[in-house]
Length: 125
Ligand SMILES: [Zn+2]
Image (cartoon, rainbow, N blue to C red; front, side):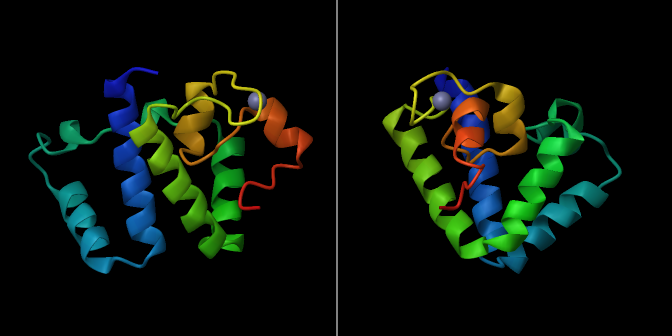
């Protein structure tokens, strides 16, 4: 994956981590940005809604987030570390490329769909 692409996912991971930690000031700032009517602020958002993955992925992600917040924090930290290492976007198990549609839905996932499902999608371990 290109560094520029990784940066986009890094932003999302940092945002997720902030939300999990209950960083309300970050959430408030984000809400303020979204309520702006100028439109120029919106274009600076790293990921557009249209680029998000399927509803299925989204639901799966939300459920895993709700079920294991503390475990997910650790997984997000690992993902951020992989961004630093330059290995982000590569499956930790089979070393295959993780599709961007999957990363868009679950930016902290360490595995491709195949490996994750072989482990029962137990991302938070
Ligand atoms: Zn894999």
